[in-house]
Amino acid sequence: MRRLSRLILAACGLTLLSLTALAEPAPPFKPALPADTTLRKLSFADLPGWAADDQAAALAVFRDSCRAVLAPAQPPAGLPAPVGLAEACRQAATVAAGDPGAARAFFEHAFTPYEVAPPVGRGFLTGYYEPEVPGSLVRTPDFSATLLARPPDLVTLAHGESVPGLPVELNAARRLADGRLVPYPDRGGILDGALAENARPLVWLRDDVEVFLVQVQGSTRVRLPDGSTRRFAYDGKNGLPYTSVGREIVKGGHVPLEELTLERLKAWLRAHPDKGRELMRLNRSYVFFREAAELPSDKGPRGASGVSLTPLRSIAVDRGIWPYGLPVWLEASVPQPDGASTAFQHLTMAQDTGSAIVGPARVDLFVGTGEAAGTQAGLLRQPVRFVVLLPNPRS
Image 1 (tube, rainbow, N blue to C red):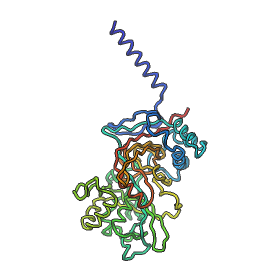
Image 2 (cartoon, rainbow, N blue to C red):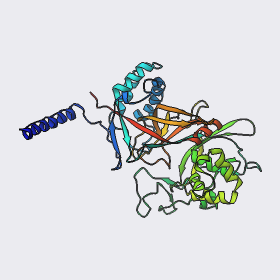
Image 3 (cartoon, one colour):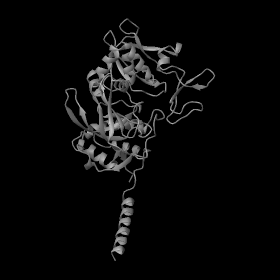
Image 4 (cartoon, rainbow, N blue to C red):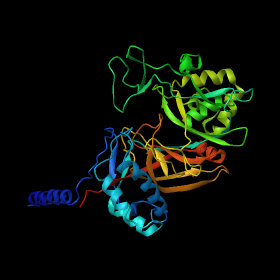
């Protein structure tokens, strides 16, 4: 009898599970996660700080993303917008601006939160920013290292595109006069003159360390001697893998990890010029720029999604896993320059990517512009709870 009861209960359980599955359809977008990473469905009540966050501010940033989702100016650099995201964008346009309650209700209606669970621990959070540095439009004794314009022979490959004869990990190549594509020169080769007449200077900065760190961030504002400011934006890279110089400095025992701030990194590279040049050349990736005169001074740099970044609301994600425009809830304990830590519990938007941002719960937070933002960004190396908001099926 007990065995029969267990069988009946088991059958009922299976029936209930089946009914639950029918009542809760899967989200229309299922990310291509590694086999050892899972998505765990949550409710908004499972997100500490959700009700306290300024959802009206988050909605404004989401609407920025929606411009690229609904009317992309060019084919997306990453994955296409998932089914349901465009509909959520259209719904967002009907929500009253500046109303946190209405914004919160919108997100709770249009999306369902899913925690991205790596096999061990949580995700990993870093920060980036837009440097503001002195420079000159001509070479001078004080400004002797240049940001280079994108060379005409550089070909950027679409995400996932491969070219016969080229390593699959490359995402750019050099087009020869006969039309063939070959690997682009690495950082060392470019610094040694491999681009020849294709190396066109845009602006001159203090030294190779300044150029290197601007390349890592991907954008900059340059203060010229006459007091004016020019902005320069990412315009492609040579397609070779990125290597973290900070990691190499720590690995070599030069600076302890817990002491490696942006200021300490700059100081060490300048105090050890020969070793610094050697370590910087280990990063074979090389970034090219363009002048971004179209950007308003009160807006952040443009991310890879094509929209201006918003401090503490815009993030860079792995573009091979997450489409641009998705909202992502982040929870982390964030260190401050004074040594204290504060809770970061905010809704952010996937609007950018980066060479080092690889993995389903890897995230880079845009902190802002200028020296203070750089200091804060340099402190971020934290575990983070990564909760993606996936659009609900259209009802």
